[in-house]
Image (cartoon, rainbow, N blue to C red; front, side):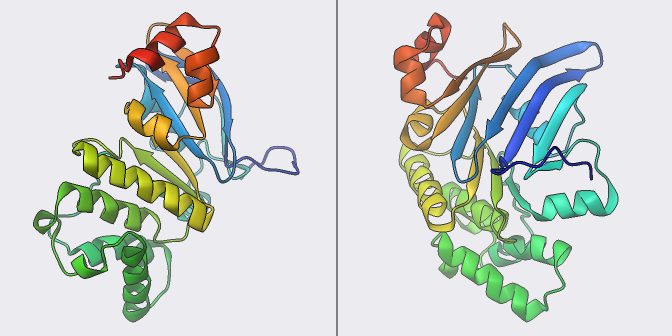
Length: 257
């Protein structure tokens, strides 16, 4: 993999001059930001702004039209084969909806990354999987199917699976989608606790302003009309002091989509 120049403090994620496009249609352009190691970093914005599209580019599901993406100091654009395998083994991902396999138990779901990326024995995988479920308070649900537990518990199981390989960096796409306010609040508290306990960097795509103001260290705000980033910083500071009136109004009104 091609690496950027050596730095004393390598960012968890660094994005430079990124353009997201599908054919001639530009979704987002001129994106430049970094995610600091150990922070809870949110990506937010209005409907159709490209939050999830940016997420998918960073984790390698799409190739950008232009620009650079570095994950833990390593080029993440266009990597294949063993380089891609090494990159994926160092990050955890939880997609919108949790994406648990309905025919597998919760423990089997959590152990999937261990089967894919490690040489652990079945017994060792089970031990690790149970430890991850204990982290999210689901050790008693190990033998249940996803359909047998609540939506909030399914989201926590997805968090446990994202943590299976002890990644330094975890991505969540709309983790609170479909949850009631209490379950959503519980999930926020879990993420904040895991961040403090493990020192993990979390990158979270979300339109939930309550979650953003509750646990985000910093927010990257995108605007569909301008097709670029319009703010970056602590959410309360952006709401109260941004020179951009759209940013202040968006964060005050709570009109996230």
